[in-house]
Length: 68
Image (cartoon, rainbow, N blue to C red; front, top):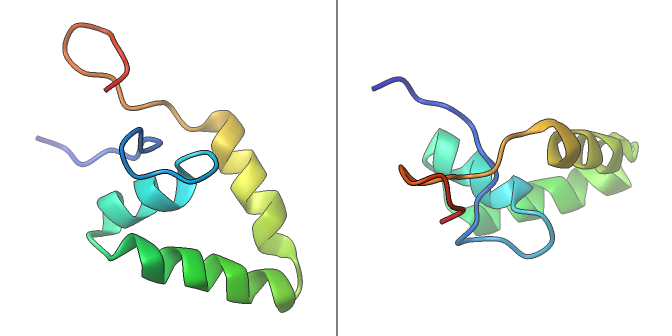
C-alpha cells in the first residue's frame, strides 16, 4: 500500500501536524515537535508551514469514513 500523509488523530497536541509527520517519516513525534520549535526561532517560517499543512492535509479516516 502506498504511504500517504494525514493529520494524526491519536498523537496530536494542537492539530496533529507533527504527529502525522512523525508517522509518515517513522520518527519519534517529540523529535518533530522539537524541530518545529527550533525552526520557529530561526526564521519563523515553520509557523506558517504548520498552519498551511493543518488547513490542507486530510484527516486520518478509517474504512467506515469515521475519524480514527
